[in-house]
Length: 563
Image (cartoon, rainbow, N blue to C red; front, side, top):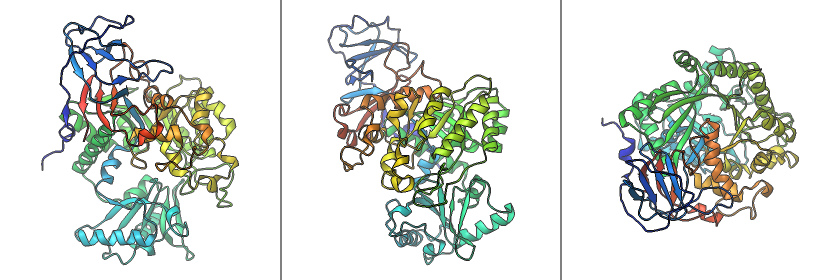
């Protein structure tokens, strides 16, 4: 079988040259190095408040910006190739600070049940797939959301029977924090529980009136996920990662932060990068907390590790709690719609051990925390792990529900708030039911984060949400869904400006991985990364919904990513 290629799946490099007259910027920095390029075409929006767009950017052979111009220079700098980028506007290269890269690709090959309005509809989709693929021993996929079902209750294994086969069916909830299985899956869960002596800390097996597993597991451990997964090969991983890289590039991203990656996924990603020589997006990898990760880190020197071109290991990812939709997010007080239920919490000592081990390897810890209790414990863990040592660029992933008094601790510790704008617009239909109106203060609170001086990095959690940064910027600016609801935005006091959102996707993402001195700005000395769109949506928030990516530039390498 021919190996998939990343660049081959895209349209190819941009090499068109042109020259346009104009007056030089008197504040331009030069000279321009031999082999440099002068980029023109779109308006280059710096994302600085009140700054006029640039009209040209000179880039050296090393991919770094040498000069910026508010008018196209005529003649162009000596020995510079003039490259016209397509599109109306270019912004500093957008980076998604939280993706699951292999999962993006895998989701393209498994059963998609997003939007299903009932368990019966899901069952019908499983049955249809089995008719099409009678050779398929295991049916995997996901996207179901019990909030769309008539009674809003979790489904059961019985809902997945009579689908035309007896093999395992295992479908992830839309947020990835619960798995719904059929009777074959229940048998595997029971065997797992017998072998383990019960549930592992932080996971919950839902049970029926008879005490047996009912068919849904909330926040399953990695061990249980492996039990309920289809077998995978290195070729599978390379294919999934290739699909993920292409999807990210076409969405206009120049970089991603790959969260909770396995060592096997890292090795497959590195193999792709070495074979290609370069990737269309840089990948900053946060390895998951397992034995393979620690063995890999023990075999490498402390600090970030450059594994292959455009692939760098920068930290370790752990989970403090679950998700709000499946009531796994750990809360300080019970859920408003489930009295007595406070969610799931990983043991604090387990989190602290992982954070200390990461710090000992010279790497920051990234802690998944959604509920207010989860966030408080995550802050406690980071503070304790640091002790008197140097402050690494530790971060909390999601930070969706935070007790108001804990924002000052984020600021004091300098913890990065790694947040996903489209989570707010996806969750707003049930968040108040879960939390009550009072706890919405401090929920999805991007304006509060910036006003408190807390570092903010934006991402998507793809494939949980779309990998498109344009949709993320729209959500951040409007706090409305794609249909414009609710008019004026949900919790509108937490809206951002378009430039603030762009900065969170560029400078904020760079800061999160200690690259703020090199990336995220159109300024001399910075690596030239850019995302080009066909319209200037900074003036019309609704335009982000239809904005098309026309090109990207990653490290001074222009790439046509248009479909």
